[in-house]
Amino acid sequence: MAYGFIGRSNKFWHDLSNRLSVLYKLNDLEDFMDLMKRFALMLIIALPLAACDNNDGAAEEVGQKLDQAAESTRDAAEDAADSIGDSAEDACEEVSGENC
View 1 (spheres, helix red, strand yellow):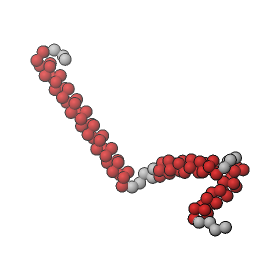
View 2: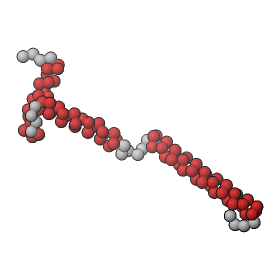
View 3: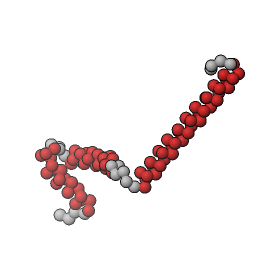
View 4: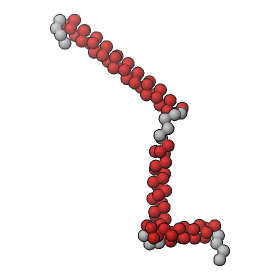
């Protein structure tokens, strides 16, 4: 019997399903394909997470520089706010003659 590309593909999956049905108690080809879809989905989710383990590279350096810039900006803003607060307190004390 001559199989086309799709026929061979279906036959391959069907044969594999039959061989694995003993291990996974699969009832038919649909159950096997559902198992393969779940496995593929797990791979799609897990591979990018596993790839994030490497901390070397240009993107990591840029990220560190951005973190440092954000931290220095935050520190400068806190210093400016403290300075404004101190100036306001000093002005209040001068006008009222009391501690504010």
